[in-house]
Length: 324
Ligand SMILES: Cc1ncc(C[n+]2csc(CCOP(=O)(O)OP(=O)(O)O)c2C)c(N)n1
Image (cartoon, rainbow, N blue to C red; front, side, top):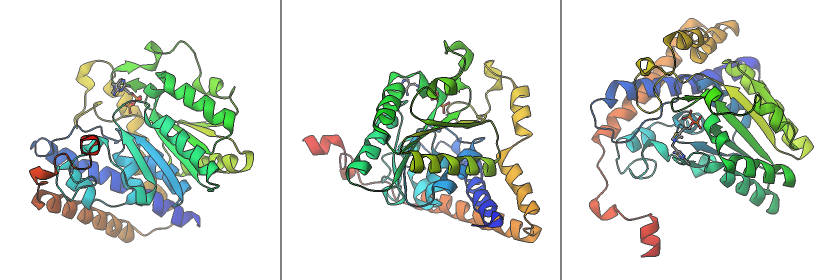
C-alpha cells in the first residue's frame, strides 16, 4: 500500500468511528437504545492504526469499550445500530447490546463486560492456531485497568513461556472508571516490567494513527520473526464519561484542561490534515465524509424501523437453552 492509500484507509476507519458515535450521542437521550454505552471517542487512532496494520487474516478480541474495534474491523453500521436498538437485525439479534459485539467472519471473536476476561481467550486462540498450524496472529485489546487483574499477568506469562503469536494491546487512558493510575499502581513503569518477559515491547503516546500503524507493523513483524508475543502500549484520552455519552469534568477526578490538551492532537483532525499532505483534494475529502455520514444515518433509520425479536426468541442461543 502506498502512503496515500494508507492514510485514506486510516481516515475512513477513524471518521466512521467518530461519526457513528456522534450519532449515538445525538439519539441516546431519547432512551430508545437500551444498552449501556462505553464510548470510544478519543481512541480512534488506536483502532484505525492497529486494525489497518493487522489487515484481513487476523483474530481480535476486545473490551466492552469496542465500538471502535467493531467498526474498524467490519466497516458496517446496519447490524451495529440495529444491535444498539435491540432489534432482531442486530449483530446478535438484539441480545448483546453495545458490550458484546462480535463478527467471527471478520475475525472479531469476542468482547466482554468483564474486565480482562478476553485476554486468556486470546491466548487460548493463539495456542489453538499453533496447534492447528495456522499462521494467524491473535490480537487482544484491553484497558490499563485490566492490567490490575491477575488474569493479565497469568495470560502474559503463558503466552511468553510458550512463544505464542499474541499481540497484546494496552489502550491506556490513565483511568479505571474514576481511579487514576497513580492511585492503583505500586510500580513505576508497566513496559519495564513486561520487558522482563520473553516479549517484544513497543510504546507511544502519539494520537497519530499513521505512527500507530507503523508501530503495529513492527510489532506484528517481531511476532512472526521471533516467534514470541508482542506488547503494544498505547496512550489515549477518553473524551466522554466512563459509561454514557456525556462529558464528566464536573465529577472532579479529571479536569477539562487535561481534555483540552489532548484535543489539540485529536486523532481524527490529525488524519484529516494528513489527507491534505498526501494531496487528497478537498472535494474528495468532503465526498468521502458525506458518504460515511449518509451510511451511518441510513443505518440508524433502518435500525429504528426494524422489528424487535419475537418473545419466543428470548432464550434462544443462550446457555439456558443449551443446558435446558
Ligand atoms: C472483573 C471486573 N471487575 C470490575 C469490573 C467493573 N469495572 C468496569 S469497567 C472498570 C474499569 C476498567 O478500566 P480499564 O480497563 O482501564 O478500561 P476503560 O474503561 O478505561 O476502557 C471496572 C473496574 C468489571 N466489569 N469486571
